[in-house]
Length: 240
Image (cartoon, rainbow, N blue to C red):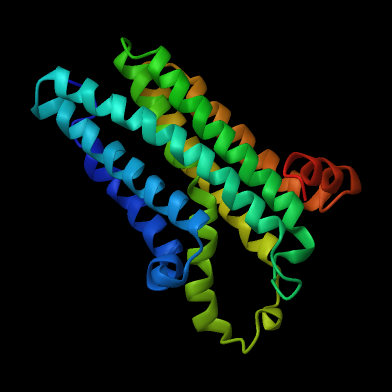
């Protein structure tokens, strides 16, 4: 029996969270800048392919799975390139934004996440003949980019609870909520690693790498903040 027969259904869960987390993009679609469209549409298309691929693997000839995978590679490159445009835009957001004081450290996180995403795609391609390893590298792409969506989604119930007139009325900062979500992603990935170890007595690098980086990113935000060297580095990279 082929592995992961229900994977396409499980992947619908983080896809739904991501759509809800970035609901403001879709509700304000006509007003969004071009860089958001390039990233939002390409990332959504990538996600759809990620969901479809396990189903194709189980229900259609493997040649179709491979051809769709080639299209996925092109989209992954586009997602990565367009993410850099979004990062540059985030660095120039107005002072009124709740992210303004930590925009450089948050952009560093985005840079780390998209680099991890691209690394996982490349590793999945490299291990294409090993289904167990290949599938886990592809699954890990979800967790690299999940916390930005779930962090935004978290403010939906938090807003209902605290009902702030302004964002500053919340009794916590954006980075606090981000840290909670980094821990959440870590716990999900840790659960998957435990399941793998129980069944196979094996820890897969794809999941271990995501888990370590997710926790490390909490330190990045709270310890680095917008350090002067980080501001200088990003201003130089993005010619600001």
